[in-house]
Length: 239
Image (cartoon, rainbow, N blue to C red):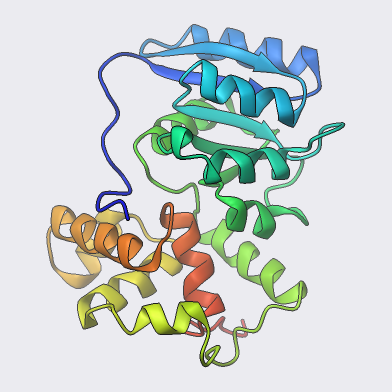
């Protein structure tokens, strides 16, 4: 098991792969990304199968992946990338028509690091690439609330622990502080936000998050959120 799920990227610009079946949208993203210092587009794909192949060949750091594409869709491609050891350092940001759409929960379970609406502002898109490349999750508190609502609507049980499940068993391996940090991650807080709330340093929080990911077998923070709710550690508030 990888003891450092958020290992640092190597030197050089962030390598971005664009996966969308709309050529016009890919062109717009390419202009935006290539005009930003410290980033460059290393490939374009019009379907999921091509995105997976290019993620391996081009050594991409971040894939901007449309969920809905003909043939192999973004969900299947994300699953292939997340399960391929050669793509261990590749982060997938799902592009959706709406901030929370019907496939987001499945995408996060498949290994996506987060999601972004196609109507996002240019600065939001560029920041999303930076955040994903750094190994963080694109889950704001508002987006997390939508994620949980979607999870529950799909029949997920967050009203009680899943006794005997793999998640519940793995939770037993967490320390009290790691559980506490996991609860805050599930609320959509950043490392700085958690550090302020728990009155510890951001570096300490990062260490706890990394250890929790290693013990739970989570690819990144986004999957920690899903695990926290699926295991029953965190329950949604009725508000």
